Length: 399
Image (cartoon, rainbow, N blue to C red; front, side, top):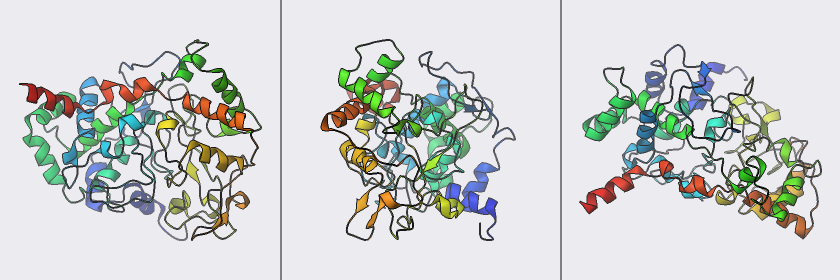
């Protein structure tokens, strides 16, 4: 770490907010916060799907999930009063936003693309490139209070946030129901726990592919999609090495695994100096570890609902599935002009699985048909994941 204190650097990298905010939340965490056990909660998931791991310090409950859902869609959790978690994570888009990079409440553009929250409960590590960020409760501090870049913009407004929630009868009641064993339930810590509980319920497991592969419905996907699955899982294309398992990612954790699997990869998206360099505001895991070998390493995102979550890659620089397939077929992207020009296929730090391949037009169509079969219409239309404030407003208008 070139002489830097690892713990100090880690805290700053994890939260990117005021020290006062970080400590006020972290110091209130119980000693068991890092102990993971399956929660006593009825998961509405098929039998073939394992249960997510839930921190012992934040057990699941229906009341907590419903509070978290309301907070997830609450625009007053931003400095402008009109920007919520859902502003960057729209249900209809697989809980992404369709933009090249995220945009905060104040209009500040972020260096990275908003990640899908589909099956976020199963990730062993969160965000694109922070190997230290492994807990949804802690991660939510970043969009709420982070300042580099500004997302919700609430850094320095913690007391006003709590006061607002305490003054709202509905929120006061919901916090008390979700956290019944404490005298003062409306706290920042409980807010982050509730949002995390809701996010853990965002489980997609009923795509046509799921019904075919796990549900025994032989005709749930087309013959073209079946051929595409075979291509996807072939050593010729090697997609399955990184996009593996039921969540199509090799960073995974659940109650049937003995240990958490964590992986980051360089896919040859850039090669600025012919030595593997990436754009300075998007260096991947290297930004945290300063390990040169981890330049351009990013987490493998799930492919679930991938047809809904364009544009792709950590910086949204790949617009379509066709372009994404071309990138992997070439073994890395070549940019001929511009500040990021370089031959990605020659990146010395790229994954060994990025060897390239060739496809006929028919095979490309088959591969896309397979990827499109991962779209879960039930998930993106599930009312349990939708904005509860819209229903409340509609009821009010009808009265």
